[in-house]
Each structure stands twice: as C-alpha cells, then as structure tokens.
Length: 185
Image 1: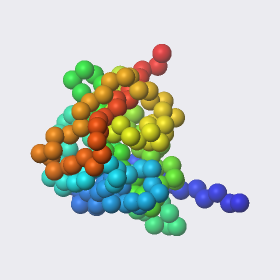
Image 2: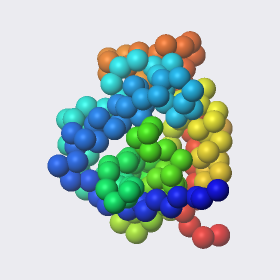
Image 3: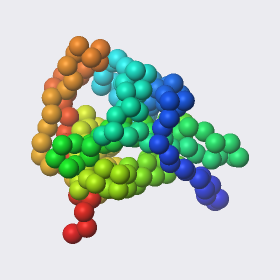
Image 4: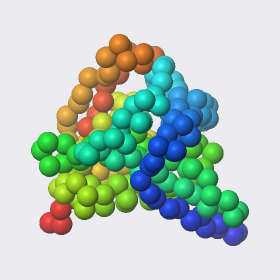
C-alpha cells in the first residue's frame, strides 16, 4: 500500500480569501458530507456558521488572526481550511472556526492548522494558553482535540443567542470548554 504525502502550507488570510473561505466554512460545518461525517454540525444546528462580513471583520482587528491552510495535491494548490485566533484579555488565546473542506480531511490539514495557530498565539499574541468551546454532543471531535493535548476544564457555556440566525436542532445544546497550556512546564 502506498501512502500519499500531501504538502500543507499555512498563511494568514487576506481579503481575497474571504469569499472562498466562507464557502469552505459553510460546507464544513453546515452543508458538507451530511451523513457519515463526524466533523460537521448538520444534525445539531441550522443556520449560517459565519458571514462574509464577519470574516472581513476578523481581518481588520489587531487582536485576531485567521489562518488559512492550502493543500498541494497532484500539482494543484487548493484552499483546504482555516482557524481563527482571538487574543483574550487574560493572556490566553481563543481558537474557533476550525474548518477543513470535508473532501480534503484526513490529510493532516487540521493538525497543521493547530500547530500554526498555537505558534501564532505564542509568538504573535504572547499568549500562555488556549481555550476553545465545542458543541456538547461532539464527542469524536473532542477526542481528536484531546489527542492534540487539549483537556476539558469542566466549564460549559450556553449555546448562542437565537438572534444570530442559528437554531439548535437538539435539546439541551451547550458548549464544552477545552484548554491547553502553551508554556513549557
């Protein structure tokens, strides 16, 4: 059996990435492989994951970054995914909006994005730790984050306000908080 290597490159997003990124994010979270995929929220929530305006806003803020992953596959470079980094007031970073094109998953893109996001949080934002929120039923995704060194800290957060246009499709939906220390012990 031959294992195919895929070259993943990471860079900061630019304005020209906004529209293609919005499509990848919607596909990954809300409209991708709707059956048999452990990576989307199709059966949990309804509504847009992000808007073009929200993505444009991230690019204008000094305390936020949006990293883009590109994948080289058969000589072509394609937009494969992204992750958002917010510098919090407490010296930690918040990671969100990890999105990998469902057709390009299992090629190392997610791990590469997390490694780059952790480096950006440390070097660019001088953060000592990371936190993120994951929808409560997403056990497989949380297990994947745990393999990357994240741990649940026991905190939970309420689900989004319905005024955002996002509606839960299951009862008792909330976020579970995961954290990781970025400082060597």
